[in-house]
Image 1 (tube, rainbow, N blue to C red):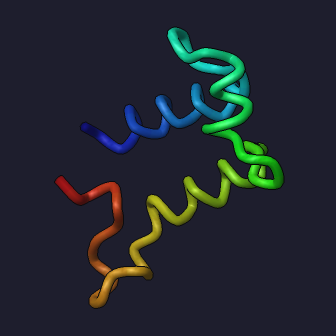
Image 2: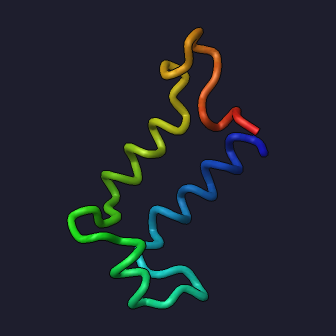
Length: 68
């Protein structure tokens, strides 16, 4: 998938702080979003930065986005 398309999908996730369709709101609040580890825009931004960061690879040529 092209990077631009991936970034557009990530942008949608950033605004989705409520349970996804089909997920029980109680389960979302108690299982998926543990107390003290809530989803915040800052945490999403950090995850996004790490996902596209090539500095984490041995030779600086790959990022998580490039994995199959």
